[in-house]
Amino acid sequence: MMLLTMISTLIILISNILMMASILLSKKSFMDREKSSPFECGFDPKSSARIPFSLHFFLITMIFLIFDVEIALIFPIINLFLMTNLIIWMKTSFFFISILLMGLYHEWNQNMLNWTN
Image (cartoon, rainbow, N blue to C red):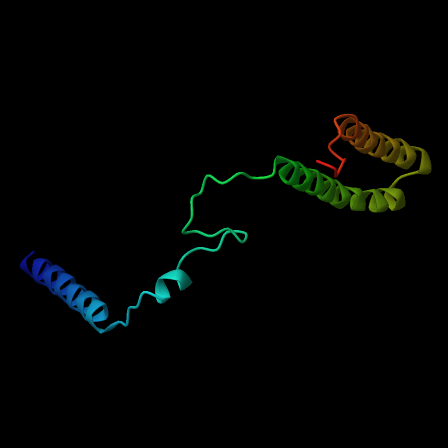
């Protein structure tokens, strides 16, 4: 038990000495503070975080992401054509593409595809 306590104390002492040495020997300047700050989409991290954000830009981004995922879901339909007969493939393709077109029609009715905002 005594050996375990001495080893633990030695490990803590060595780690504290190394941390203090790194703090004392490291170069710090005011200019390096900006390099270590996070970069978030061109926004200045030193300014206020509550600046107005374009809701239209956000909605267009969401539409892009949704259709991007749906395009990735279309690729297995090609394999389905090779594995099944033509009728099953046509029903599956028609169903999936009709869901996409209904979503596009809804976005068009909501004027989300209008860039004049």
